[in-house]
Length: 211
Image 1 (cartoon, rainbow, N blue to C red):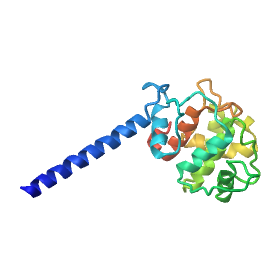
Image 2: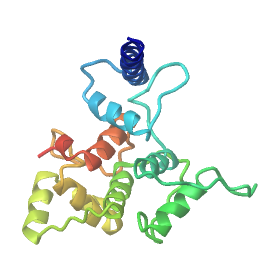
Image 3: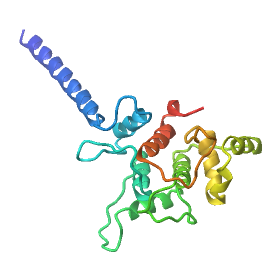
Image 4: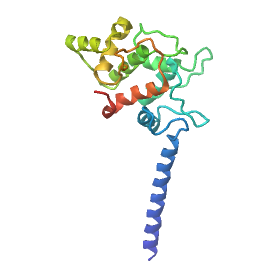
């Protein structure tokens, strides 16, 4: 009888712990400014649960807020489980270990330079996403015909410049990053936290990609 009571108590405890964990996860993603119908909610929830992005202390996520290059690089690094060592050098900015990680792992090449505290553009974001894809072993190749088709579908892709265009073609082909309804990509447009979440979640979860 005592054994039966013990096992019954154990089962109840496990159920309660599981329920609490589920509740905590639900609470974690219930941002006050992120309604159920928001186009990027599923993407944002995915990255939050992955431990790659957080909201703000006031309970908001601020999906329409712009994001800096440093912030985006940190999210990308967290998405792949990077172990970043904190530096004690006073002359280093907080984001420099993330830049070093990205350079050491060929996520960004030596010629890629940006003001990391500045707002990131869609072209710069696409560059980092494509580099992150390469880091996790997802390499995309496209033919000249596919490139021509993408140029036709997104008429301003060529304006991105040679540094970015090759990587942009890769993420566009894979459905990780999309253009706008007017047939533009807008490479120089600053990106939002919602867009950043969508791009990275599509990288890791292929079911979220746009085809």
